[in-house]
Every structure is written in structure tokens, then in C-alpha cells.
Amino acid sequence: MGHQFSIKIVKYCSLIVILSYSPVVVIHLLAKLMWNSNIAESNAYITTFEAIMTMIIFPVYLVGINFFLARKYEVKRKYFIINFLIVLSCIWISDYIHMSNWSNHLGYYISPDSDTLGISEFEKWTGYLISIIGLFIAFFNLNLGKES
Figure 1 (cartoon, rainbow, N blue to C red):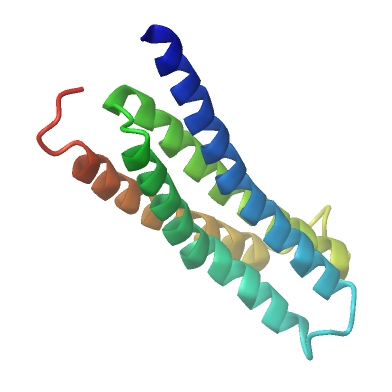
Figure 2 (cartoon, rainbow, N blue to C red; figure 1 turned 180 degrees about the vertical axis):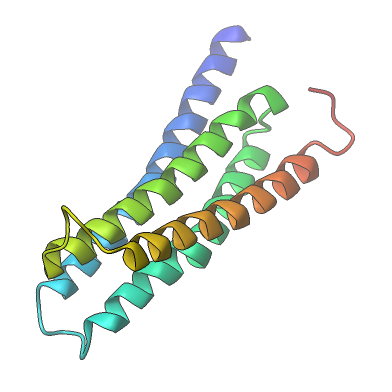
């Protein structure tokens, strides 16, 4: 029984890692290609796309996929902290790659201006806030009527 349980947790964690980190990295790599080409009419469209992904789309997707997999694998409360850490790290990575894409393209990587840093912080903290709210809702929804 214990052996099956550990295999189940390993499979669960593997799926969470792959389905959480892969879209974040792939989307920003595709955006990087757009930054380096003439696909978009303006770089403002690309940076807006990346910001919306970090602030809204990724948090909703990440909470949804983590909730779905936690429910499917009947994850107990003590393991759901893994979901919190992964989702918040994905938001941080998303903001970091977005800032890297922007600054590498415009040449301001070493010393970005304070407005840019402020926008980046707003983007990251908005993503954190939406993720945390969603994760708490998912956590309590998963565990209603269950013991840890």
C-alpha cells in the first residue's frame, strides 16, 4: 500500500511540474521569438501579451491545473503546499523571463528605469495575488469534509 502511495505522489508531482512550468517557459520563449522578429506591429503588443499572461492567464491556468490534478490524485492537505510553491515560482519565472525578454531587446538589462521596475513588480504581485486567492479557494474546496 505504501509503495503504491509513493508512486502515486511521484506521478502527481511529475505532472504538476511538467504542466505548470512548461507552458510558462514555452509561451515566453515564443514571445522572445516575436520580440526578435517583425511579426508584431509594435513591441507594446508583445509586452502587453506577456504581462497579461503573468497577471491573469497563468494564475488562472496554474490554479486550475493544480486543482484538477490534486482532486484526481486525492492529494492530502500536507502535500498541497507543493502546489503553492510551484504556482508562485511559475509567476516569478514568468515575470523574470518577461523582464529579460523586454530588457534584452531594448538593451536596458543592467540598469532598467524605475518605471519599468515598478511595472514589473506590479505584474508579479498581481499574479501572486490572483494565484494565492485561487489556491486558497482550491485548497478549501478540495478539503471540504476531509481530514488532513
